[in-house]
Image (cartoon, rainbow over all chains, first blue to last red; front, side):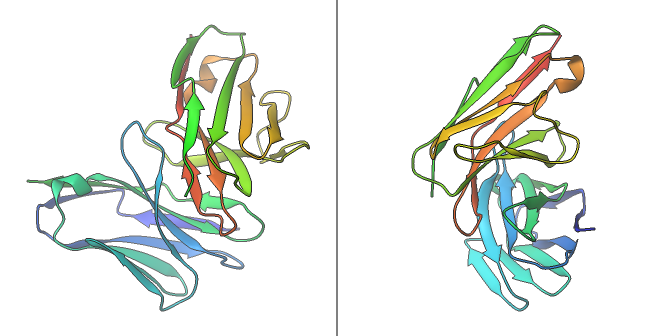
Length: 109
Length: 113
Protein backbone atom coordinates (compact mmCIF):
# COMPACT_ATOMS: atom_id res chain seq x y z
CA UNK A 1 0.00 0.00 0.00
CA UNK A 2 1.29 3.45 -0.93
CA UNK A 3 2.12 5.48 2.18
CA UNK A 4 3.80 8.71 3.17
CA UNK A 5 4.96 9.55 6.69
CA UNK A 6 6.18 12.91 7.87
CA UNK A 7 8.29 13.66 10.95
CA UNK A 8 8.35 15.35 13.29
CA UNK A 9 4.68 16.21 13.78
CA UNK A 10 5.69 19.59 15.16
CA UNK A 11 8.97 21.48 15.30
CA UNK A 12 9.78 24.56 17.30
CA UNK A 13 12.84 26.58 16.27
CA UNK A 14 14.44 29.81 17.27
CA UNK A 15 14.91 32.32 14.49
CA UNK A 16 18.13 31.43 12.65
CA UNK A 17 18.20 27.82 13.91
CA UNK A 18 18.44 25.60 10.84
CA UNK A 19 16.74 22.20 10.72
CA UNK A 20 15.20 19.59 8.44
CA UNK A 21 11.78 18.02 7.97
CA UNK A 22 11.50 14.42 6.89
CA UNK A 23 9.11 12.70 4.51
CA UNK A 24 9.45 8.95 4.05
CA UNK A 25 7.41 7.13 1.45
CA UNK A 26 6.51 3.70 0.26
CA UNK A 27 5.15 3.76 -3.26
CA UNK A 28 5.11 1.28 -6.08
CA UNK A 29 6.03 3.78 -8.75
CA UNK A 30 6.91 7.35 -7.81
CA UNK A 31 5.81 9.91 -10.36
CA UNK A 32 6.56 13.02 -8.40
CA UNK A 33 7.24 14.05 -4.80
CA UNK A 34 5.69 17.37 -3.84
CA UNK A 35 6.17 19.82 -0.99
CA UNK A 36 3.44 22.29 -0.07
CA UNK A 37 3.17 24.97 2.56
CA UNK A 38 -0.15 25.61 4.31
CA UNK A 39 -0.90 28.65 6.43
CA UNK A 40 -3.83 28.65 8.88
CA UNK A 41 -7.15 29.23 7.16
CA UNK A 42 -5.68 28.81 3.68
CA UNK A 43 -5.25 26.09 1.12
CA UNK A 44 -1.85 24.48 0.51
CA UNK A 45 0.62 26.43 -1.61
CA UNK A 46 2.96 24.57 -3.96
CA UNK A 47 6.68 24.75 -3.17
CA UNK A 48 8.62 22.02 -5.01
CA UNK A 49 8.37 18.94 -7.19
CA UNK A 50 11.09 16.28 -7.23
CA UNK A 51 11.13 13.36 -9.62
CA UNK A 52 14.30 11.33 -9.16
CA UNK A 53 16.74 10.35 -6.42
CA UNK A 54 19.53 12.88 -6.06
CA UNK A 55 17.44 15.78 -7.27
CA UNK A 56 17.51 19.00 -5.25
CA UNK A 57 15.56 22.25 -5.52
CA UNK A 58 15.92 25.51 -3.64
CA UNK A 59 13.76 28.52 -2.95
CA UNK A 60 14.94 31.23 -0.60
CA UNK A 61 15.63 29.54 2.76
CA UNK A 62 14.17 26.19 1.69
CA UNK A 63 15.89 23.29 -0.04
CA UNK A 64 14.20 20.00 -0.90
CA UNK A 65 16.11 16.80 -1.56
CA UNK A 66 15.03 13.32 -2.63
CA UNK A 67 16.40 9.81 -2.11
CA UNK A 68 14.83 6.50 -3.08
CA UNK A 69 12.92 6.27 0.18
CA UNK A 70 12.63 9.76 1.61
CA UNK A 71 12.68 13.46 1.03
CA UNK A 72 13.97 16.23 3.23
CA UNK A 73 12.97 19.86 3.43
CA UNK A 74 15.92 21.78 4.80
CA UNK A 75 15.23 25.17 6.33
CA UNK A 76 18.26 27.43 6.65
CA UNK A 77 18.21 30.32 9.14
CA UNK A 78 14.42 30.35 9.41
CA UNK A 79 12.41 33.46 10.15
CA UNK A 80 9.08 33.75 11.97
CA UNK A 81 7.30 34.10 8.63
CA UNK A 82 8.39 30.56 7.79
CA UNK A 83 6.00 29.29 10.46
CA UNK A 84 3.41 27.10 8.73
CA UNK A 85 2.46 23.48 8.16
CA UNK A 86 4.61 21.79 5.53
CA UNK A 87 2.96 18.96 3.62
CA UNK A 88 4.70 16.27 1.66
CA UNK A 89 2.79 14.44 -1.06
CA UNK A 90 3.45 12.01 -3.85
CA UNK A 91 1.88 10.94 -7.08
CA UNK A 92 2.05 7.25 -7.89
CA UNK A 93 -0.16 6.21 -10.78
CA UNK A 94 -2.78 8.22 -12.57
CA UNK A 95 -3.45 11.68 -11.22
CA UNK A 96 -4.07 10.78 -7.58
CA UNK A 97 -1.86 12.54 -5.04
CA UNK A 98 -1.37 11.17 -1.51
CA UNK A 99 -0.66 13.75 1.19
CA UNK A 100 1.21 13.22 4.43
CA UNK A 101 -0.07 14.46 7.76
CA UNK A 102 2.31 17.43 7.71
CA UNK A 103 4.86 19.01 10.01
CA UNK A 104 3.80 22.09 11.91
CA UNK A 105 6.73 24.47 12.09
CA UNK A 106 6.91 27.26 14.66
CA UNK A 107 9.75 29.79 14.42
CA UNK A 108 10.18 32.11 17.34
CA UNK A 109 11.82 35.51 17.03
CA UNK B 1 0.04 28.69 -12.12
CA UNK B 2 -3.69 28.96 -11.53
CA UNK B 3 -5.86 30.95 -9.17
CA UNK B 4 -8.70 29.03 -7.54
CA UNK B 5 -11.78 30.82 -6.24
CA UNK B 6 -13.99 28.86 -3.90
CA UNK B 7 -17.27 29.85 -2.32
CA UNK B 8 -18.75 30.03 0.17
CA UNK B 9 -15.75 30.49 2.42
CA UNK B 10 -17.73 29.24 5.39
CA UNK B 11 -21.24 28.18 6.29
CA UNK B 12 -23.25 26.89 9.20
CA UNK B 13 -25.93 24.42 8.18
CA UNK B 14 -28.69 22.44 9.79
CA UNK B 15 -28.68 18.66 9.95
CA UNK B 16 -30.42 17.06 6.97
CA UNK B 17 -29.86 19.94 4.55
CA UNK B 18 -27.47 20.13 1.60
CA UNK B 19 -24.77 22.63 0.67
CA UNK B 20 -23.23 23.20 -2.75
CA UNK B 21 -19.66 24.50 -2.90
CA UNK B 22 -18.46 26.20 -6.07
CA UNK B 23 -14.92 26.19 -7.45
CA UNK B 24 -13.75 28.45 -10.28
CA UNK B 25 -10.30 28.30 -11.88
CA UNK B 26 -8.90 31.29 -13.73
CA UNK B 27 -7.27 29.17 -16.42
CA UNK B 28 -7.71 25.76 -17.92
CA UNK B 29 -6.39 22.94 -15.79
CA UNK B 30 -5.97 19.29 -16.60
CA UNK B 31 -7.64 17.96 -13.49
CA UNK B 32 -9.84 19.22 -10.68
CA UNK B 33 -10.01 17.59 -7.27
CA UNK B 34 -12.07 17.84 -4.10
CA UNK B 35 -10.53 17.20 -0.68
CA UNK B 36 -11.70 17.16 2.92
CA UNK B 37 -9.47 18.34 5.72
CA UNK B 38 -10.24 18.05 9.42
CA UNK B 39 -8.68 20.86 11.46
CA UNK B 40 -5.04 20.06 12.19
CA UNK B 41 -5.04 17.05 9.90
CA UNK B 42 -3.99 16.32 6.35
CA UNK B 43 -5.99 16.25 3.16
CA UNK B 44 -8.20 13.33 2.19
CA UNK B 45 -9.16 13.06 -1.46
CA UNK B 46 -12.90 12.82 -1.98
CA UNK B 47 -12.99 12.58 -5.75
CA UNK B 48 -11.53 13.66 -9.05
CA UNK B 49 -13.92 15.86 -11.01
CA UNK B 50 -14.03 14.82 -14.66
CA UNK B 51 -15.24 17.21 -17.30
CA UNK B 52 -18.57 16.15 -18.78
CA UNK B 53 -18.67 12.79 -17.05
CA UNK B 54 -19.14 11.25 -13.63
CA UNK B 55 -16.53 12.00 -11.00
CA UNK B 56 -14.12 9.33 -9.81
CA UNK B 57 -14.67 8.74 -6.10
CA UNK B 58 -12.20 7.44 -3.54
CA UNK B 59 -12.94 4.64 -1.14
CA UNK B 60 -15.36 5.75 1.53
CA UNK B 61 -17.00 8.47 -0.55
CA UNK B 62 -20.11 7.94 -2.68
CA UNK B 63 -21.89 9.95 -5.32
CA UNK B 64 -25.20 10.05 -3.46
CA UNK B 65 -23.56 11.80 -0.53
CA UNK B 66 -21.09 13.99 -2.47
CA UNK B 67 -22.43 14.64 -5.98
CA UNK B 68 -19.89 16.51 -8.11
CA UNK B 69 -20.28 18.32 -11.39
CA UNK B 70 -17.72 19.72 -13.80
CA UNK B 71 -19.55 21.19 -16.79
CA UNK B 72 -16.40 22.76 -18.28
CA UNK B 73 -12.63 22.92 -17.80
CA UNK B 74 -12.67 25.76 -15.29
CA UNK B 75 -15.67 25.16 -13.02
CA UNK B 76 -16.79 22.46 -10.61
CA UNK B 77 -19.25 22.03 -7.76
CA UNK B 78 -19.36 19.70 -4.79
CA UNK B 79 -22.60 19.12 -2.93
CA UNK B 80 -22.61 17.76 0.60
CA UNK B 81 -26.00 16.07 0.88
CA UNK B 82 -28.20 15.23 3.85
CA UNK B 83 -25.62 16.66 6.21
CA UNK B 84 -24.86 15.43 9.69
CA UNK B 85 -22.46 16.87 12.30
CA UNK B 86 -19.85 14.35 11.11
CA UNK B 87 -19.66 16.29 7.83
CA UNK B 88 -18.30 19.33 9.63
CA UNK B 89 -14.91 19.91 8.05
CA UNK B 90 -12.94 22.04 5.63
CA UNK B 91 -13.59 21.25 1.97
CA UNK B 92 -10.89 22.18 -0.52
CA UNK B 93 -10.93 22.38 -4.29
CA UNK B 94 -7.78 22.16 -6.39
CA UNK B 95 -6.79 22.37 -10.01
CA UNK B 96 -3.92 20.27 -11.30
CA UNK B 97 -1.67 20.87 -14.29
CA UNK B 98 -0.08 18.23 -16.53
CA UNK B 99 2.62 17.57 -13.92
CA UNK B 100 -0.11 17.32 -11.27
CA UNK B 101 1.13 20.37 -9.44
CA UNK B 102 -2.03 21.40 -7.63
CA UNK B 103 -3.30 24.88 -6.90
CA UNK B 104 -5.77 25.15 -4.07
CA UNK B 105 -8.63 27.36 -3.13
CA UNK B 106 -8.83 28.83 0.35
CA UNK B 107 -11.39 26.20 1.34
CA UNK B 108 -14.94 26.12 2.66
CA UNK B 109 -15.28 25.74 6.41
CA UNK B 110 -18.50 23.86 7.06
CA UNK B 111 -20.19 23.45 10.43
CA UNK B 112 -23.28 21.25 10.71
CA UNK B 113 -25.52 21.69 13.75
